[in-house]
Amino acid sequence: MMLSQLNLYHYRNYDQVDISFSKGIQLLTGKNAQGKTNILEAILYLSTTRSHRTKDDQDLIRKGSDAFFMKGMILKENRKEDIRITVNEKGKNLFIYGNPINKVSDFIGEFNAVMFCPDDMMLFNASPRVRRRFVDMELSKVSKKYTITLTKAQKLLKERNSYLKQDSVDDTFLEVVTDQLIDASVIVMKQRFFFLKKLLVKCQTFYEKLTQDDTMLDIEYISCVEFDENEEELKKRLKLRYQKSLQRDKFMKQTTHGIHKEDFIFKLNDQDLNSYASQGQKRSVLLAMKIGMVYMIEEIIHEYPVLLLDDVFSELDETRKMKLLTFLPESVQIFITTTDQLELKDIECKRDVCVYHVDHGTIQRCEGGNAHG
Image (cartoon, rainbow, N blue to C red; front, side, top):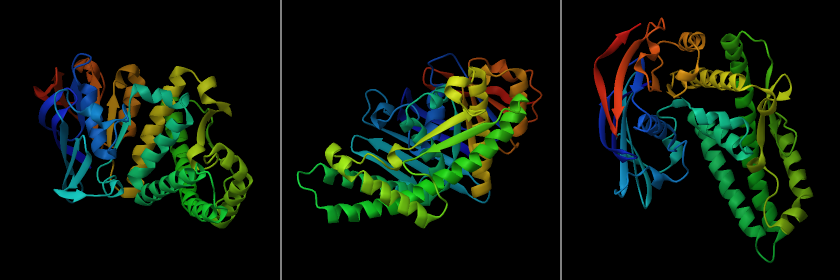
């Protein structure tokens, strides 16, 4: 799939954008703080309905406006697809072919994008919440069942916590809510476990190719119970855990164990990657992970996602730039932001390269912006 057209109104520092894109590499050039990252953020937002930089959608509305609108024209193997999002003070509205979409789970996955940006380096030293958010976002792109089940589990967790805060707790009612939470949690845990297992294999493969290094990678899944592929056994373990923590939950007036507390620790040679790895190794692991995600999405939905590289290409040496472009099939549409449009000059690239200049909230395709490596 590819993004052929992007329309933005009152988004970030853009008053209005109507821009067409082509296959191959889309090189967004311009000085710092002109709006290059905002374009990539908007593309990712069309994919995930979330910003990677803020939790508050109101931050995305241009100063002086009361709403923003975005539209993307997506080219898929057999069809074109029109997706739109509007955000105002009342909330968010999603549309496919102009038809309102009431559930986020019915929207996510229509257009897939994978992003690699400098802030991703924080994944390894951030709180467990950040790593859960990363896994949840990537999984939601390829599994509607995961999105629906995770939303259900979050609602049940909120209901359980609300009940625990009451002065008098009916154990029978609490058990009913807990059993429903366990049923949803088992599905979430299984999908997280197998997603990370597949991602690890991809990540290991591309890390070795990028670095010529046979360092062993691992992702440790940390949960309140030991994972078991058998659903009934996993349910038993979760039920026992909730029974043991019941009195503590009542005292704390919240659920102290569960999928909302899980963590995923990345390791190099059995050492915590955050403490053990160099910045270069961390960057290579992340890059390998993103390449792996591109291939995983294609294996599941049979179409490659769009790849967004925000101010990352400039940090790679010529060898890694070459390897990155070599690893990715030519059918993958890639957006790259840079302050130097000559950055690709010395790379032997067989892909089409279209150059765009971003300046003070405007974006224009450069004349002669089509180049061939």
